[in-house]
Length: 512
Image 1 (cartoon, rainbow, N blue to C red):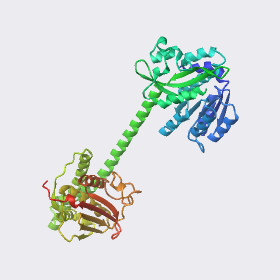
Image 2 (tube, rainbow, N blue to C red):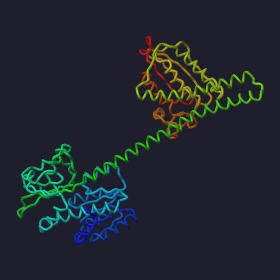
Image 3 (cartoon, rainbow, N blue to C red):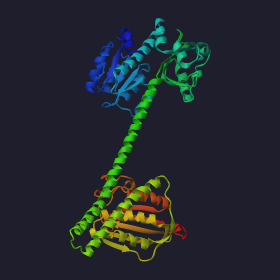
């Protein structure tokens, strides 16, 4: 339908009164100037309450409204209007694309849903369609000339009181693919689409048999099995005794419009998904490179120091040199552990990480970890309280358990102040190991095990170091190995208390 065709309807539209509800002044001013050219009277309201008052006190033919406004919103107003007068066309113009608004609009029976910024062409096309429908409905009973206008502008069919088709126009034949002869005498079920719930057809019949107009959007099937969408109005016609003698169905093809909206929504969702992925990548790179930078700086600085001394033939004190080299090695292993964590997380998420379980000494594993972190412990002058009063053996993957404990111990070293307490306890059913520190602690003890939570200061009090990768890795591997983990506040030291529980039925000696 051409936009300039609205000019043909101006004599009719100039008899109609419009209610326009919009809280934004510049938008209200711009569109009011357009509407004044089209309608007899334009009643303008700045909110829904004022709009509802005007609707109840003025003769309104069409309503155009925004959604989000102070007080009552536009859809709430529309729902009240629909209860009072179900035949008044309502157009929504809004900047909101939330599904809840689309769904509520469908439930209410909104005639058109336009997204801001609204193009003038789309607006005029919509108004043109609405005016055509109003003109058709108002004219059917008293002037047969308008039926011709209706058949040219819309998809029209007639049916007898039993629903048998008695008339179809060319537009219905063209969109459905059926000839006039194939449709006359058939039921409208010939267009029935399997996606349409049965209760919709019951609702239609119940409505029109009461003598009321039914309006809604229907998905239909054409002769070739393809679907077409149509905004539909079904009008029951009564004789002077109030008996229904005919139904007229007026449809507007909205297939192209709906498909365009769906494509726009799909494109929007795709862009949002791509944005989330890019944000996740960016966050990962920032966090991971930050974690690598600390040990890398240590490696570079210590190596430069030794290199400078050698170049200048200066004496290198053996003890200090050995200490620097040990720090270099320790930091290099720290970097390697971070890289391995990332690779292992990728394997875990793809269910490709394998395990080699065997019986091993938990005591020896902890001693080897303390030796690995010795330079960091001494650098921060941390006191280690080791409470292990007997030999403990567990059956699990030694390498993965060492990774788990290494991540937990690394956190205690980084975030504790000057004391760490390591304790192993044994019960009849399990072996438990606890690592406590005297740092600031962790506020949200669940989210800390999720990826990228380290920088969220509302969840974690620790802000200075860490990738947010280690504890996420701990969670995944513990779940795979059946190791129970928990995180609490340390009552003894005031910081954090990590706990791991190895159940005895998992500690039987099995070759792996």
